[in-house]
Image (cartoon, rainbow, N blue to C red; front, side, top):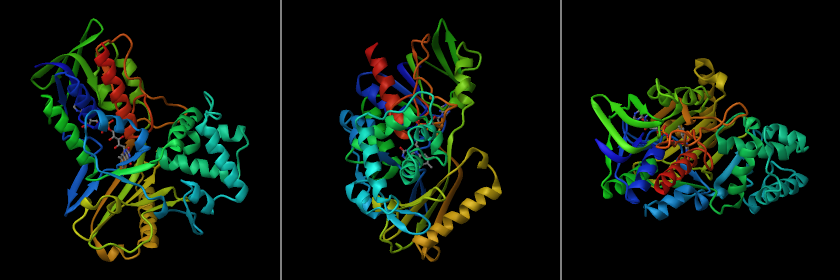
Length: 427
Ligand SMILES: Cc1cc2nc3c(=O)[nH]c(=O)nc-3n(C[C@H](O)[C@H](O)[C@H](O)COP(=O)(O)OP(=O)(O)OC[C@H]3O[C@@H](n4cnc5c(N)ncnc54)[C@H](O)[C@@H]3O)c2cc1C
């Protein structure tokens, strides 16, 4: 089968690349080994719709998803995060989140001099006066610049929650400042999508189909064939797909398998060795809402948080129900250790007991994931994101949250997808 562009992988990166290219006149095909959505999946269970992840979009007004929304005329039901219903749990007390001027004024996690210093840091980040240094982690950068005490703790707490990591000090300082320059200047720091990831997937599929694109589910790429510095064919069982250009939106470990015995095998393999950002997710569906003034609680000491997803998306529960999501950030050495993961479970249940007392009586269904990959390549000083193309292979591109781009998490998938699509359209 022959197409202008074949896109492998039907996650957010693959579907957004395909939608954009088909909307711009390319005849595209998407090959997906399982069901569409990848890690952005919405699972129906006993009348509740569980999203794999919170489907929060950060800085939506300046996000790449906004660009897709505008250019592809996607229908997205945005529900903005309410900072007045968010609190940090310091262990001793609940404190306002300093995500706006009022929060900064009221928060107890910063002292009065700390508030002034933190506001000054925000200002310098916005104006790129502070932009980090090459080869210096944010932990080292804060030390070098003598930023200490509550201000240091505040900056690292922010990084924990945006980068989904319990080791925020390891983030490269340049990545940190590039990220916060955008987030500090946004008017919409966090927003959820009504209908969850599924609503977004449906919109991308609609655009692809309206533009005569083809989607092949349950179609697994097994081997890439190359010749003369080009990809020529994709083998999926007995079916062969050929095209002028190919976009691979599958994670590095899968790329390493399908590119064996090609000239770029070794180049691809280095990215497959990197660690991922992983979390413990514990979602609960309740028959009735538990009365609470807050919809987001971040446990500062244990680096975990609860979001009342149903406050932002009424469609995710049966009438009158509530869907709460808890996420705990895992360290590499904790992954797969049953006794440590059991401790996380107990800590999360204790956090539910503390802030949503009554959940046990109303519990209808729970969903636990002990090893969820939030981002395929974790940001630390020993790892780098994968480029979106290999210089010698002029018809071969890569997109996904493991690739170079803007932002974190799904924003990396969308930004690498848009960059790749534009490179193909410019050819
Ligand atoms: C618990 C959790 C919470 C999260 N919370 C957020 C959040 O709040 N905000 C946010 O922005 N992001 C969040 N994320 C991250 C977000 O889900 C991912 O960044 C995004 O879904 C990645 O999409 P992708 O297309 O880059 O990769 P993937 O979703 O991994 O897509 C890859 C696709 O390729 C397919 N594939 C693999 N191998 C083959 C093959 N050989 N042939 C054919 N197909 C193949 C896979 O089946 C998959 O569909 C969260 C993730 C998790 C797990």
